[in-house]
Length: 456
Image 1 (cartoon, rainbow, N blue to C red):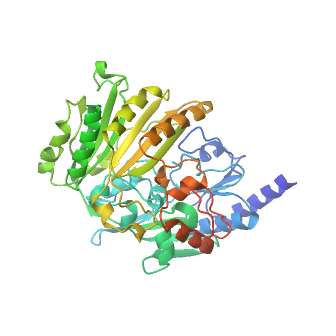
Image 2 (tube, one colour):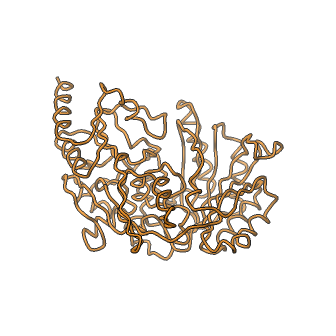
Image 3 (cartoon, rainbow, N blue to C red):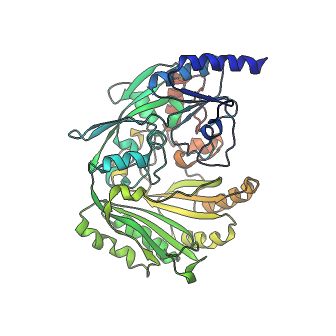
């Protein structure tokens, strides 16, 4: 009887929408329920591929009134599988890819179904960019609401620092505009508070004039001295340079010498957005650390940083935290720990921060880690979900050896976490303020498939 009632309700919703509503009986259902991490195998009652904010509001109201679990998906990269639901309703924003550009004002209104790669490719043709992480398939909605630590972080700050306004469908089904002058509390909360406060359908973002850059990969043999030397060079480099250092074991790839396969390497992702003619001098200290196994760093167009295939992932374990630095014994712990993992791919990612991100006060947005100098992300990817406990233990062991205990993490990279871990991601008074705002904008916690902030 309950199942029949639910299907009658779904038919009523279908009649109200101008968008596509996909259920189990529809041929595209399995594709519609799939998210980035292929090991997430959930079966929502329906997936609404919404085309506009009005349909988002209708689905939100339907879920609230009917007591349905509600998932919201932009790019679907949540490691916890928050972009889908078992038996609930999914709002899939991937069809909302509208883009309105004010070239003279260097701003754009972006619908949140666009991916970072799609947006960057389009704007790159105009020589304009917004910092949107390092993965092209990530949805703009997801990365913008988490904070956004990308290739422009030291020069232009986080993605949320370029966010000027947002259109949000609240738990009541109302469409409101949040900015510094309109709903400023909501605007503060969504800049780091993820989707806890509503469904963001449009973002107004600031753009920066960036055309030719010096970027690419620098692959070095990894020793404790190379790892700490890379981080020191990144911290003292001009702010126009942002780097991502991935310490892992060399895969058997043709561009890596055969005698290095299986040995520790540092894959440096480099993005220098200053004058191209200065690029060689800026990158010189990194190349001097050791003879590179491979060096693809060259003048290029900024969107090329997002080129290349993305590896399909079934399962992933991860732990991340913010720190001030990595001591030599920390580098030694990384190199000691990598061979102990049996994951298909395991790595420790190190991102030097500072610069523009640190010039914004910690309490200016819900992202409140601006005074930390380093972001550490330990991860393991694997094909068999039965191995989860083993890989969780490995990533947590490495993270604790590097100083994670008591340090808060970045919500954009968290998985299925307990409240204490989520609480630590919002240090100081940030957590209490977010809970108070949650009780105002979503007192019944409709938006709970996320790194959840419970109402006060």
